[in-house]
Length: 104
Image (cartoon, rainbow, N blue to C red; front, side):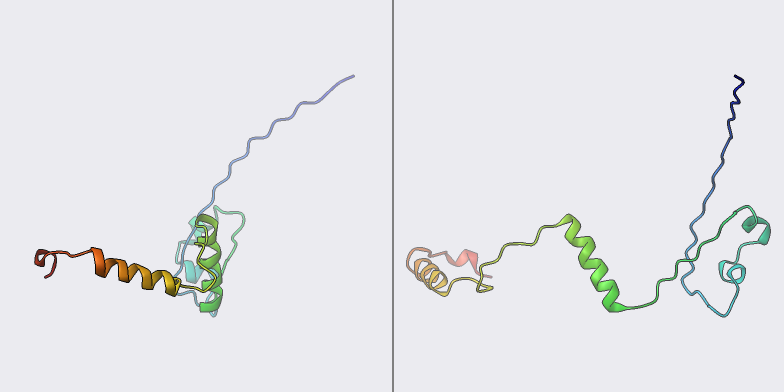
């Protein structure tokens, strides 16, 4: 039974271009400002537009930070226990007596 083997070579090229002030009233070529001879080398051109939104940016930033950092575990009251702080200050007043060399 005859069989056919076929191999294709594939070449892929991509480019990422950032246009800080994209004008929707202009064409893609006018916004990117690259010569058409260079743009013609790409089969597909995708536009990804980021509409300014502080709320959306804040949500995205929180999500990205949460991927790498754990949320610190705070006491349920949201601060230090008042009794612990009172005892610490009383201890410091009684036992810690730095010399004048520590004061500026």
